[in-house]
Structure formats: structure tokens, C-alpha cells
Image (tube, rainbow, N blue to C red; front, side):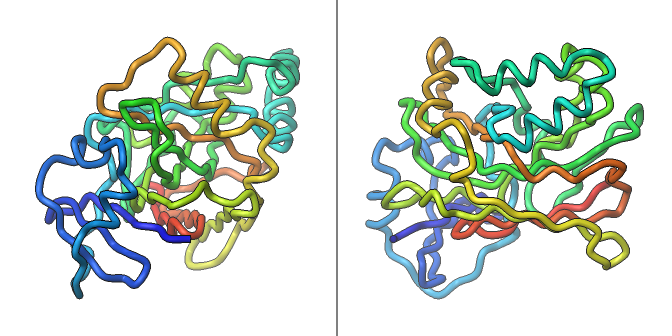
Length: 273
């Protein structure tokens, strides 16, 4: 399957083909990624030997949203963390409900790109990264590409009361995204693997992986609910949930290195500030 990786870099927009060749594209990020035939336009570019210049977070005016409890493992984890408060029944119900859980995650101000520093809240004692396949939906409401998301979460805050979810999920540097926007000839295969490894003092302290086939809801279903009553003039990113959840008592610490890999997108590496 042919693919192209679109990078927002310190040198502007750069597109990389499967052979590692590069084409620098003039213009604005918002305009380029919202072309209705993005894959075809990438295929028509002229590529040459070059290197990617300092990749940035692949976002400008886009919003970032997220879907929750789309995997069974996520449902179980959420029920465990909120059992004491009596909120576990909410996660049990939403997993089987017709309507998915979708919430606002952030924007360029709240996001962190490849090589950047994500944050954990000072008022939280239990924090985890959540590796997620992230969809790019263009301004026409079309699923146009993919990226890697890191949905940083304060599990103790959300577990205390489901109404605290915005505080547990949305804060400065809580939305990891990158390293690029991948556009493909065909949708990603259900066998596509998401993997995450966390390093502390250069030693691996957590590793997990899954296939996106384990997701209960389809990408089309999530896009449909997100765009039913909202327009996105610059497009939108949608994180699709995770089932890679470190078991308690694991919690992130300052200096931890988070590596999230989804091929053929690549690897998003970020450090905890």
C-alpha cells in the first residue's frame, strides 16, 4: 500500500514518500492538509534526496478531540479506578451504548509534538500515557489521514468523579501528537499494531501492544458522531481510545521517556517534563 508522510517542520511543510525521498511544499499547513484529494496530490509531487528538518507538532488551527472506552481493556481500567466513587457503572454503560463517549482534548496550545515534553498535573498522584491511533478528519468531514496520539490522563482525578474528566484530560501539554500526518491509498488494516514502551533511567518499566481490530467501534462511526453537529473549518484530529493501560500502582515520573509506535506512521517519542 502506498503511503505519504506529511511533516510540519521548522522549514515548512515536507512530504516524504515510501522511498524516503522528500518534497518541500510551499503554503499553509491548514490549506495543504484540507485538500479534498490529499493522497492524490501527494502522489503528484516531485521528490528528491533531502532530510526532514526538525519535525514539529503536526497541527495549526485544528482541534483535538478524543473517544473513550472504545476497547474492553479501557472499560475495565476505568471501572477499576472509579469503583470507590460509584462511577464505574457509567463506563460499563457507555461501552455498550449506541452513542460513544467523545470529549474535547485540546488544540495547538495544549499539544506537544515529537521530541517534546508532555506534562503530568501537580495535583494528581496517578498519571499515565494513553497511546492512541489518531484520525485526521478534513474540513469536508472526510477521514483523510492518521497520526499517533498520546492522551495523557490523571486517573485518580477522573476516578474520583466522572465529571472531573475535563480536568483529568485537558491541561497544558496533555495532548501528544505526531510525528507526522500519514495519508494512505487504503484504510489502515485491522491488524495494525499499536505499541508503547516507557523508559525510566534508560530502563524499560512498561511495555504493551495491541491491534486496532480490538476496538469495538469503527472509525467511520466515531467520525460520524464527532461531525454530526459540529463543523471544523480547518479539520480536526480524533484520538480513538486505547487498551494499553499500565496496571496500578504504575504512575509516570518526571524524566520518563514514552515511545509510541504505529507502523506505517512511525514512532512518537516524548519525555515527561
